[in-house]
Image (cartoon, rainbow, N blue to C red; front, side, top):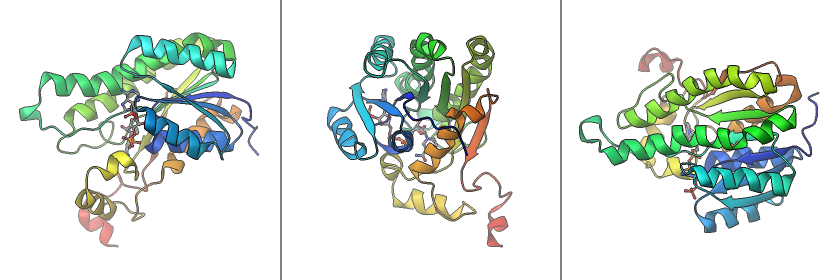
Length: 257
Ligand code: NAP
């Protein structure tokens, strides 16, 4: 039904685990050639070993908050894959810090990775995306920030809402090169990073989701894949919420049925 994306060159930042790895798996299973990035080599090697059954996946160690690393990433994609058709700017962190205690380092690390890192990743890939003729950028934002709030995540929420502000103007600038840029807003998805938040957090989040379960990493991947299809060519500057209905209840009682 959808035009195949087999053979397309796809870069997934933060693709060594969690949602990024799920996105990489979905694209690889669809026949795309995928370059994943992260900073930890053991995790990257393990991810490639796991994903290689799905398709053509390789890794590069690169920090999205460092401009030179993003340039290396784009160059490696052009070298290995012959170009870049799709950039999934997914790398992100979500450390906990209350506003009253937040340090400069807390703020700079979260904004530097999640917001600046998204901008640097897109900037570095722009020439290759433009050359593709059907360049696609898919940002991994979040419901937290753009729609909801959660204690401990003021800096995280600001970074995730900031990605959408970036996206809306970038969509206009990039349209001249027929590049689209959209964002997926996951709710709570069971990843290694989320598991670190503890069982109590996971239980309480599950109870607040109408579909009564956390999302899977592949469910975020399918939304990203849709935005990368030829059939989504006329969608730009938009968001897709993938959250099992988490943002919908007006009160806890609304979930009692
Ligand atoms: P995760 O399991 O912690 O994985 C994060 C990935 O990003 C890893 O591959 C990590 O590899 C990489 N990464 C982190 N900092 C990086 C940096 N500076 N440069 C390059 N790569 C970096 O996290 P996740 O839960 O999958 O989250 C992925 C994205 O989804 C984030 O943007 C997050 O905000 C968003 N999100 C997650 C959820 C959720 O419920 N899990 C919900 C909404 C949005 P290294 O550590 O090796 O660098």
